[in-house]
Length: 155
Image (cartoon, rainbow, N blue to C red):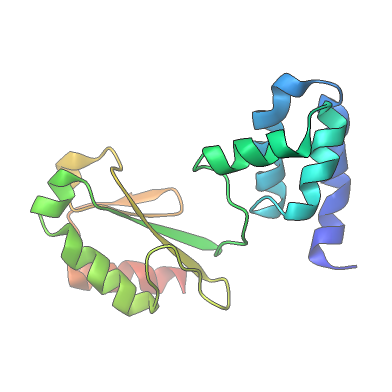
């Protein structure tokens, strides 16, 4: 059985828990993404059927909210702030070093799924700018040496 197949019991449990409740769509999508790491296309019809909505409604919510992903992402998600405070304090240089270190461009995932690189408008930590987040850990006052040291811990 492949990895997705091993996750199906958990996915079915989510659907059964929210069956017939169309207002639970966002919660079901969030939980589905927690299980698979993204929302596989083959889960859209079962979600729609369980909640009693059209597949197009499920797809519409997925594409409307940036929190949902339809492609597999890296084990480590690196976010680099491109907000004003970070930009003024060298955020563009942080992004260049991250791109060079990971050999990725914005929005790309490494072929071995070790990293995904994203830029974001603001991380809400302006006093620490320039800021980078790896998974849920914030790193502030970034410089090239710190970036390389931090990313090495995740390799």
